[in-house]
Image (cartoon, rainbow, N blue to C red; front, side, top):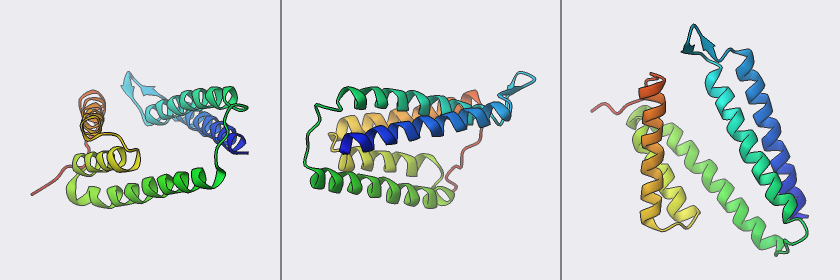
Length: 151
């Protein structure tokens, strides 16, 4: 039963990505050589489709091999989902006060270290890498101003 839920989740991810990609294409990707409002939804949709297809492939491959305790896996899964949801809301509420970089870095570090149980050094590297990637993509390449911290 658990594998069927994974497969349904993967199909949902692919469907959501297809809708985002279609919406991005309808909004136009570029206008006169400059990125337009449809570029980010299109890229987001492509990433969702890619992740969904990879997840679907793994889920179908492991369909018969996966045997686990339903209750314990549900509890740990529900804990992770609620942790992601709660920390994302806190991060969103802190962005107007602390800017984008500080809440996003703290959110990712906490998620990697305490929710995903990754050691502190890789958690630090992953969170820093994501912040640097966002800086390069949004500020340097696309020219989007992210919320910043004002003293």
